[in-house]
Image (cartoon, rainbow, N blue to C red; front, side, top):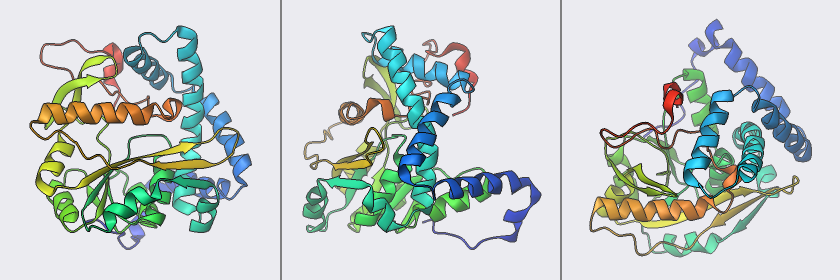
Length: 314
């Protein structure tokens, strides 16, 4: 269980001054009116495309692999919109960490809140499947305001960033769990808690199986959802935080509960979850984190899908 630790004087060491400078600047920028934040964020994202060349190539490769029928022009349009979301994702992280509940709620429309309330009334644990949209931090914050639960995350290597990240995420949630703490997740679900879980990234070969994801036949996919479902018997509810165009705000889409997750084996369960994730992504594909090497883990004796790009650390 991870809660906010007391501030340490070591966080003020000169090695962290650039971190504090960046966070301070972000804090000031998110004080601006949202339409101006939207203008700055989308333009910062467009500019970033010219500096993040390797990430641009990864995003292009992912779209090529997932949507082979997509034309080059369509792919380029998706890339342009995706990098606008990259810029907005930075500002949305600041909004999630520093905005008041009232200001966040002002810019969100919530759809499907009753889908959560129905399950909460039964006392059953809930796995909220929240995939890696670039609106991730902000979506988790608004969901937590409405339904405080437990976040699953990877601790940041920078202790100042880890402290700030944990502090920001716990503004509207109970506590955090390391993504490796399966026992903690199972215990929380058995106590009727809401657990935020993202099974859509490539977490390596350990506790993964190879199943289809879009047009990629063999995609390393975590069996974590299968383990949690088998041992804790939770309800699974997908949700999507979607940014609206032209600075109109956001929608939080809370889907109906999944009542038929296959549990006969790991492969059928993982394949089912990937289909569910695909449907979530297609609600706002330009806002998904295509910059991640989703297909870096390959079956034995199978060539890389990224070539030289495999040298990049995710």
